[in-house]
Structures are given as structure tokens and as C-alpha cells.
Image (cartoon, rainbow, N blue to C red; front, side):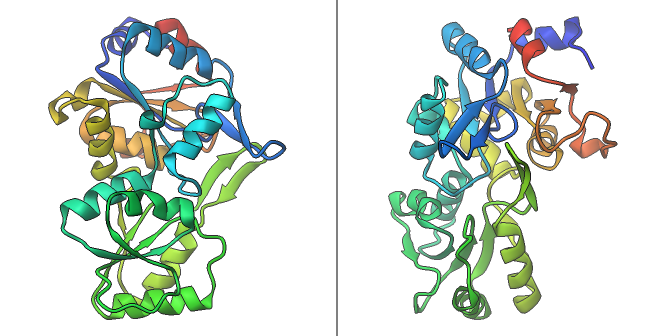
Length: 280
């Protein structure tokens, strides 16, 4: 699909932009442990920066703190400051704080837990013995073991709510799709406790509202926002739920020939970012 005059005008008049990372603007580079920019991605963000239009990068990964992802993107040539980088732990920290949740068991690594600790939450380790845990938060945790499963279950059985960074099975890498860690962890916890996870990363409205706050924009500007991503169940669903423009890319999870339900269908599906760059 191409950008017609109406879509081009909508892009040029956008209040702000939310970009996914993996499969949208970059791919993980296993050789360097960093990221490799996808075609035209750096130029798109440079054009936005030059025009003064606000943008953030919101990955659904929680393996690292936001600042570490931002540094990796800068090393790849992207104009992304620490404050422009968000992960599901950013929105999780905001929501848990707003709901008055104090003690949280994090089934995730240090990068996953960092934004919660920074927000002043009482964070309990995956297998740590603790009373009064109010929420179990799942994220990137490939070290997950039976002890963590048992500790998480006991917290949930004792009244904690189950919340998660992400509940999609795959994400895009330079070697194709990879398995997301929180999805199988959530499935195990739900099977054992019958509690279903509340998603605090994409595609939740919590994630969208967190991005809007960082951008300094009111929720009323949602319909003037543009969300760019490669996963129909994440970026497209999040944008469509609030009436924002959804720009899908066939550079990651989403294929150009895939049939999608209306809630996951992009406003426009592009092969790469070149048409977006042209519009800007």
C-alpha cells in the first residue's frame, strides 16, 4: 500500500510518533551485542528531530533498562536520548505506583526490574521469600526455573495480582523470530493459579498513556498520533484502540500478505520506511 495525499497529510500533521524498536527501526546485532539500523530508520528520526516533532521509541523488550537500549541505539547512529526510550517496565512502574501497589515480585532480570526500583517500588527477587507481595510482574527472564515458578505461584495464591510486560510469543531479530520470555512464564503461572496476566506493555492503554506523558501530550491528542511498528498484535492494536494512525512495516513479525482482523489492521502497510521518510 502506498501513501496517498490524505495519509501523507496526516503524517505531516501528527502531534507525535511512537516507534517500535525490534523489526521496525532496528534489529538486534548478535555480533556486537547491540543493534543494527534498518534502512531509512535513522533518517526518519533525524527528520523528526530537525522538525521539532516529538517521538519516543517503545520496545516491548525488558532485557535491559531503557537507558541501556537508548545507548545501544545511539551507538547504531540513532538520535535517541535516554528520556525518549521506553520499555514495558516504564509503563508497569507508572501503573503500579498509580494503583498504590507497594511490594512487587519481579520474575525478570535486573534490566526488567530497574525501572520499578527507580520508581521507589519494593521489589522482591524471583525466588526470594517474602510476605505481603501485592503483584507478580513477569518480563525478560530466560533464567526462569522451578524455584521462581514456585515462589511466583505462592505469591499469587496468597492474593497478589499477575501483571506482565508482554504476552506475545515472538519478537523479531536479525535471525528471524525469537521466543519472548514472559509468554511461556505467564502460561505456566495461569495454569497453576488460574490468574490471567494484565498486560502493562504494548498494546495496553497503560503503555500508550505512558508514552503520551513522556511526549508531553494530552490524551486528547491520541487521534493525532502515529504509531509505527511491525507487530499487528502490539503496535497496530494499541494504535487502533485509541484512534491513532497505525503504520505497519513488513520488516519484522508482520508479513505483507497476512490477513488481519480489523483491530490489528494497520492504517497503511509499508515494505520499509522509505515512504514515511518521503512524507516527512
